Image 1 (cartoon, rainbow, N blue to C red):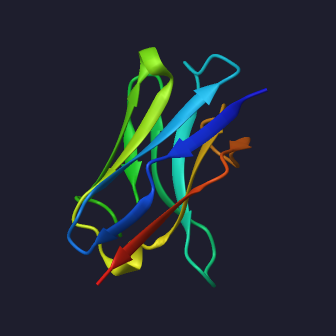
Image 2: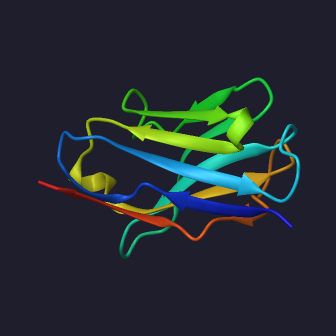
Length: 119
């Protein structure tokens, strides 16, 4: 069974930075895709970024492109989301997720970490 544990959320002023971490355990991840999603109060969950564990190919939502960077540390089985130039509209609960298929739904989800950006 895969377990995903996020950390790194908090309160930051607009223009600031945060780095979220997602520690994965339970299986091998060489064939996995890791994703970050977020859900703001009263809104639907939305995709933020994803990375192929093997090869490190990344993809971003337009709303975060150029400001957020997703990366992974193979030795630590951890995926990161570096968030720079944060805006109040980035305020949300952030979740990491994993899937073993190239497309389709994610199979495993973390519990989430809260990010609040003050103006």
